Image (cartoon, rainbow, N blue to C red; front, side, top):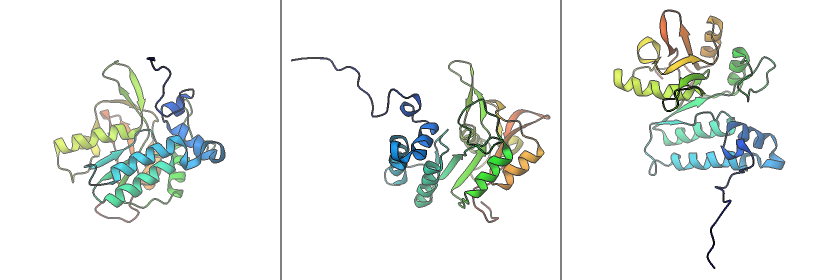
Length: 233
């Protein structure tokens, strides 16, 4: 008999948008419901961890930067930091979990972000590594294929800044400020930051993405890694 195959899938739950798209919300749901959805062995978290395991092997992947845009859950981000530390030759650009005024994790696009709560929660994670750099907040970028504005995780802009930095300066120059940290493709930032917000983020070792009245483009206004001690890194 000969017959055609129909209704196949690629291993994810095709009846759940978050699960099928391997989103951060799916990872959070798996971790919060470890009994019903598997926790760190759930399909979303385990898929990203398996990908990180592949990239962790220096013989299999030649990378200098690692980013997983939009994935913010600690079960994935902490795992990625451990991987680049083991490699010892790459930097992880990290998106962080955002919190609202009630200290709840923000999972939707319409909820205002509390910068102070987000910063304090990130400090509580006690991350100490020169192999990671965190950025916030989200940015609005024009999709060149559709010419529509799309909300993107901050690491999308950070990757562009790293590339621009190599073009304008040197790899050891900080990808920040009015020249090497300018983000011309970013139309605006998802959360407007005041001076206190900038201080909160920077004190938490989170590099702010912001706008200033005297500069038409958004800029990365920080050059910190996640190393706790003061150093050249």
